[in-house]
Length: 256
Image: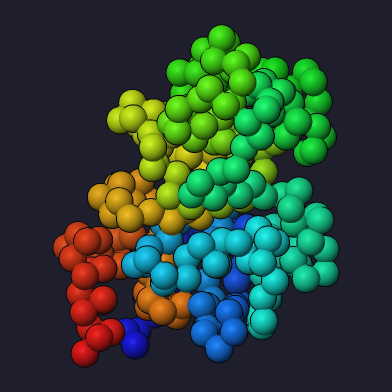
């Protein structure tokens, strides 16, 4: 396995740890989907989670979100242990899967108000936030007021993204968030993600679009077969090359 590249000199390293994963292990029967995985994401950091299909990215995200139990290791979010207080951790995160399961019988507004109710967002704030993100992502009032069953895939993705940012969590977990978005919406989402992290939040997101990850992210985690291959600042990991070159080299090197 390649040496782990860990960025230890950024100002974020000296700040608040938003996500701490220590020796995470998760198996499905005899197959280890994630094995002894450890890394940390700090306040203000946008972290890309990279790996081939089946590398363990989605499993890791679901473990952090409290959707999957794990076999070993520890997870802390904003200083709170997932094992000790899973409900409090869930209050501090938002998780958006690659294919969000929305309630088609609701209108977009009903769904967003439902999410706001779950997380206790005051009425005075939810309207302002819904307007802010809906406007940015070009969802009109008429579309927000329509049944989700009438939405295109891209519209559903936008609605799910609004729901993720609505309660202003400490950590947002996104699984392939750019899939289904048009170029304009993708551009807007990048700005929203940057603003969220500048305000002190943290984002961990999986993507196969390496060019986006390279330009957008402060940190990058690369895994293969559920194991950590490389972790560090984007500049340290890619060096003078591109993230795509590094990823392909690591993939080939692990197979030698």
